[in-house]
Image (cartoon, rainbow, N blue to C red; front, side):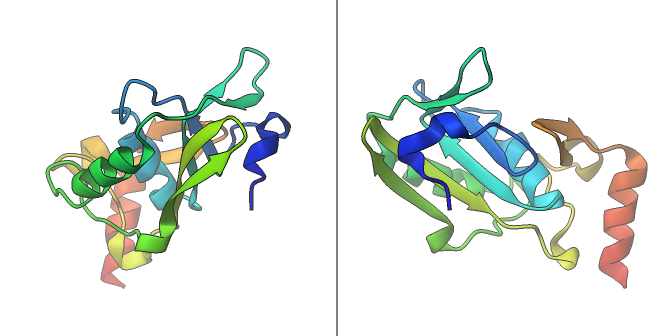
Length: 151
């Protein structure tokens, strides 16, 4: 598990995404949720910023529990995302020396759940993770996930 009191030793990558989130739940969280679910899973940290040298620093959140509640409401809304694949223990608020951080541990989706997509269209709302970025899946990638459901 991550040592949140030593964030400077981590970098964003295939399985780690930091979001400052001081202005509230960031819209881009849903692309990352979809990308992690459609790839190998990963951890989203809210209240952590990426510095110019790509190191991470805890900024902290003023209302972390409210952010968790808002996330739960939206992840269960089919107009936002196609499926909630999280269990209650996958989201928690962690206290650090520098403030509170929301940790969201997104598992890799099961084959019969994929693709996890945003909005109502899997061809426009499915994402995958590559390096430290979220990328829209192309039609072949989406078809591949849809076909895998059938077998």
